[in-house]
Image 1 (cartoon, rainbow, N blue to C red):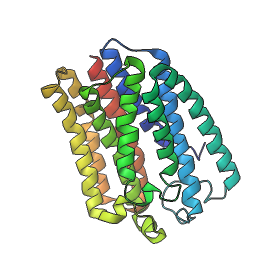
Image 2 (image 1 turned 30 degrees about the vertical axis):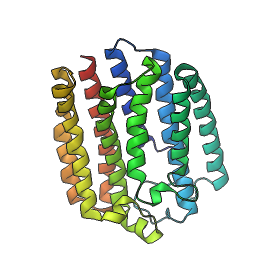
Image 3 (image 1 turned 90 degrees about the horizontal axis):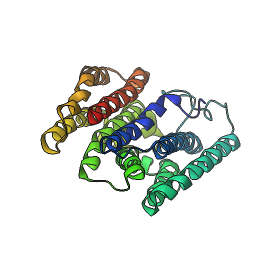
Image 4 (image 1 turned 180 degrees about the horizontal axis):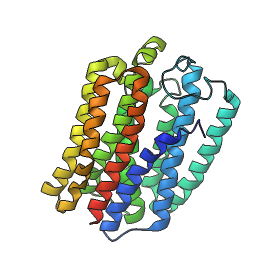
Length: 284
């Protein structure tokens, strides 16, 4: 349970909720594919977390001196073999879930599913882990934001459109913001270990600016949906969470190191709150 990082899992549900609300609004809601999409999102997040724990420890990035929450291998709570078995078990469940989604959605879901599994494993694994070369933020935005929302909608409706893609953008921005906080917290230890995250490449101050930009852009998208895509005024409901977003930014600019751990959890909560409000607005 500790290795699965439960506090990160609500963010995995956010895109599924938004994609399902879009399907509902179009009169195409389908319970079984929606639940399967939710299961797939959770399994992919857990798979990514386990792989991250395994490969970061193997590469010497995670040590007992890490600033973030406990990592099971670095703390000696699980062996490498046990974590590999966990990865295999979660991967097997993800494949079984994916088979059903492929039967429902066809070859596009196969392509997205295979790419998502590879992204989860290769974030910190493989010969060229993209999380170690400044590409983690981009891949999180694409797979845990755009692909997750559009894929959830697609398995229920059988197509997707530009308004679905645009609606996925703020979800991707806020999930990426979670990673930004994580990388800002670990910027010094990552740099020493040779893990070149985007935060390491652009520096702490620019990483804080990146976080601010992601939140500002996320809150601009509902306005775009209302003004340009024919959504009703209710789509602006996410602005209810704006005071929480302002507090996250303020804290981020005043905190360092372990002080950022609560900001990390709070940003995940903000992502879920924003997505729930956006989903209610879409349905209304």
